[in-house]
Amino acid sequence: MPVQSVLSVEGLSVKFAQRNSSLTAVSDLDFELARGETLAVVGESGCGKSLTALALLGLIPPPGRVDGRAIRLEGQNILGLQGEAMRRLRGNRIAMIFQEPMTALNPVLTIGAQIVEAIREHEDVSYVAARGRAIALLDRVRIPDPRRRFDDYPHRLSGGMRQRAMIAIALACSPAVLVADEPTTALDVTIQAQILELIDELKRETGTAVLLITHDLGVVAEYADRVLVMYAGRKVEERATADLLAAPLHPYTRGLIAARPRIGMRDRFRARLTEIPGIVPSLRDMPPGCRFAPRCPIAIEACHLAPPPLIPVGDDGSVACLRIEDFRVSEHSASYSRAY
Ligand SMILES: Nc1ncnc2c1ncn2[C@@H]1O[C@H](COP(=O)(O)OP(=O)(O)OP(=O)(O)O)[C@@H](O)[C@H]1O
Ligand SMILES: [Mg+2]
Image (cartoon, rainbow, N blue to C red; front, side):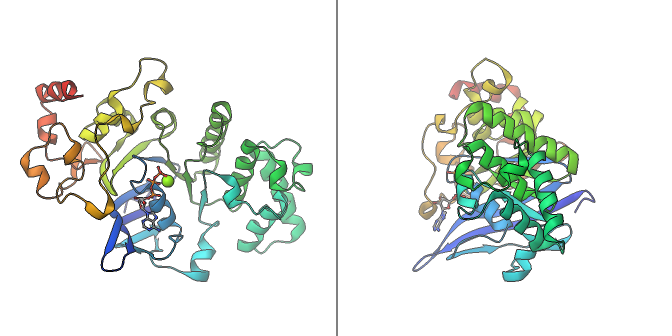
């Protein structure tokens, strides 16, 4: 594990037991997250992004099961930690913000009480000290008039303000890792930008590492240092953001970026994955080879036979495609572009 790594995930799988078998929703996922770094996780709906996030926090609901070699958080293997041991870390060393703040906020407690609770659950401080910190946090996430807002219930706040309150709770104990699962999808565009700026600014101030799950390639371009592309529960490509957006290697990533309109930076990458012809295979019926092969315009026979290994590219990138060597030759890239 590199010295800088605050989170190192090795061979993570998430499975759901069925009557006679089990469904694997996330397969053998590896990634690392360094201090102060933002890693974006992108991929079509149902590819396992949220399950990956929940697995890190020990929040996979039964009958789901997390397997793997290790989930190292600041050097400690937290894979399989349960109950009190996991609760001590959650909200303290690793915290999560969700798409819909109302699912995470308690409707019968004031915003202030919830931040105070988050602080005092992990730190032995007086109510008065925790209250002072909570008000400072509300101010830091730019909730106006924080002293008054402290006593407000969640339903009194707008969607954007609720998301800010959730960020305040998540950051109450300065976690090493912040997992943000589509944190702005439910908000309007202006508020989205403000919330993402806020997360980015807090990250730069505190060095918290951010795992940012998003559908929006414009958001990736603007905020992520590296990108992990998932397809049907597997990592298919992981690269530095600039490299991936400029020269995507996996056919799936290429499809994702292919249809970008030629407007501003954010809009240019605002392509939706559904523009790729075909549909994602069902968990019950995964193809034996590359899971993208049935939709891939350049698949060869070998692609249908066995899952491709992850091949290292550049300094710290990787791509799971048997045709990567061909991609490095430009005429194949040209034939690929024609296929789209
Ligand atoms: N309790 C469960 N039992 C069986 N399968 C499940 C369960 N929960 C999730 N899944 C399956 O796991 C897969 C991954 O789900 P996940 O929520 O991680 O997708 P996602 O990438 O976050 O999608 P989205 O972009 O829509 O949020 C999906 O195919 C989903 O149907
Ligand atoms: Mg999700």
